[in-house]
Structure formats: C-alpha cells, structure tokens
Amino acid sequence: MIAAMQAPLPAALNRLVASNLAAQSAEQLSLAAVPIVAVLALGAGAGEIGTLATAQTLPFLLLAIPFGLWADRHSRRLLMVGCELLRGLSLLGLLVALLLGQLSLPLLAVLGFVGAVGTVALGILLFGEPATAIRLGCVALILAGLIGLKLAA
Image (tube, rainbow, N blue to C red):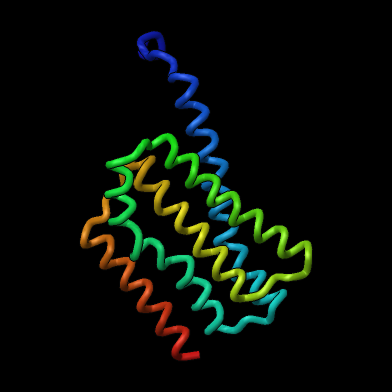
C-alpha cells in the first residue's frame, strides 16, 4: 500500500545522486590512496604524510564560509558542475603524473588541496552543509593535530 503511494523520483535527481555517488567514491578512494602511494612510491615519512593530510583538510577550514556566501549568490547548477570538474581534474592530474613518472610530494599536496576545494564547495552547494563555529573548530583541531604531527617528525 505504501509503495503505491510513492511517486517516482525525478530523472534529474537520480542522475545527480548517481553522479555524486561516483564522484564521492572516487574522492574517498583518493583520500585513502594518496598516503599509501606517498609512502610506498615516494618513501614519505610521518611528517610528509602530515603535510599531505593538512593540504587535504585546509580547504574545509579556509573556504567553507566564502563558498557558502558564493553559493547563495550564484547559480548552484553551474557551481556544482564546476566543483565536479575541479575534483575530476585533480584526480586526472594525479593519474597523468603517475603515468608520466612525475609524481612528487608537493604535487600530491597541491592536487589533494585542489580536490578538497571541490569537495568543500560541493558539500555546501549540494547538501547545504553549514559552516558553523563548532564545525570549523573541529576542523581546526584536526588541522592542529596534523601540523603537530609534521612538527614532531
């Protein structure tokens, strides 16, 4: 009886959900793979891994509020497409650098930062994630821990 009352979801929403699921999966895989690649392929130590993690976390602290303001004033559709392109280009850059043998720790940090910028903006645009003081404080604590790891190494 309940199934008969539910209307099917719009096709556009289904496409958005499917594309976001694919992009989020790729992003999470890259977040897990980057430290492993850094250690195994580049011989990175704890300090370098801390730097990579900081680069991937910093956009959440620095850009949440500006992106929230930006999202309120511009077309969300265009901004979401731009965010997905930014994240995709970051992953593509990682793949190209790996295939060309040009992978380095600074490049991993830059690509991680760029990918995280797209993730922050998309989270605000798509899910309406607020940039509350508590959330920014938690991210700042994570960042402080990562910087401490870098300084201790």
